Image (cartoon, rainbow, N blue to C red):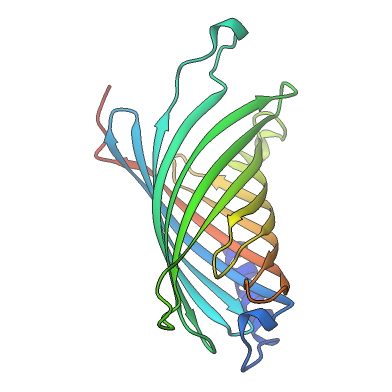
Length: 255
């Protein structure tokens, strides 16, 4: 685990050396960020799992700190289309969720976002060794920037394409437990919100799964995003994201 600490430390120091004062978010063209999140699961009842993410995000230069709490109910889908003669259903699961995102800005009003979303995952089998996962999600975003303007609303559609390369299919047994998650995501706004709208995200990473089903993932993310609806400014975000997953499902109910 030492190498992981060194990567986070070097990234933190290098971004601090470039920090600037008196900047607002729409002035930033290129920035660096660190994202940390912890993910855990609770069994609601048989086949229904509630996944919760608690996260913290920091941007350099010093513009904001962001705190994230999001819960997602995963509903598996087991029926396949018989006329296609498929062993597994095309749609893997449905998702319902809600989240709170609080952005503490240094030189601008803070922003509170309440988010609802609905989505589903489906797989497209291609070659034998690789399966591409697809995730489509509709988000309803309600924001308040504490400027006496009340709540504003926006609607956003997200599409994510992902795959995982692991040692069993692609690498030797020497790296037992390691895997390589690869993701690409597009955010399309149907009705724009006040902050953080259209976005393209690329997420190459590396992960490790322990025998007790705990796992961590380290991502090197690139974002191209629009900061504020009041301007046409965009920014390029370089993000180091560390994710920790608790593999033990609490309150598990046996089938």
